[in-house]
Length: 108
Image (cartoon, rainbow, N blue to C red):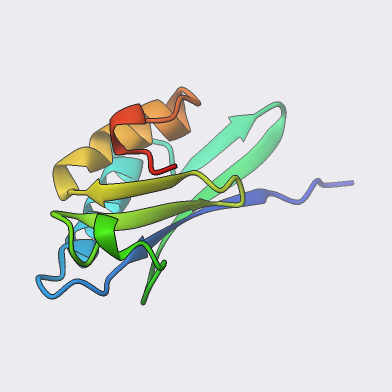
């Protein structure tokens, strides 16, 4: 029997006036391909990673009123704020590749 693959979704808010969220989502997709982490194998289970945009994550001080976008890792629930396109490489490498939260971007 084949096991179902799990999906990790990175929800990126795109409610900013300058549309930085769209740029962050694009940068994350590029980094996933570049680093070969669009599909992972963890503990014998396939893990797909999807980047999806959304309208609002209710984190406006870290998004709409901040210098970057808010990002939610689902299903685990890690929240990042003030994310800029240049942060995509760190999120993909450290969080998805190495399993470590990027502390400087994490919102409690």
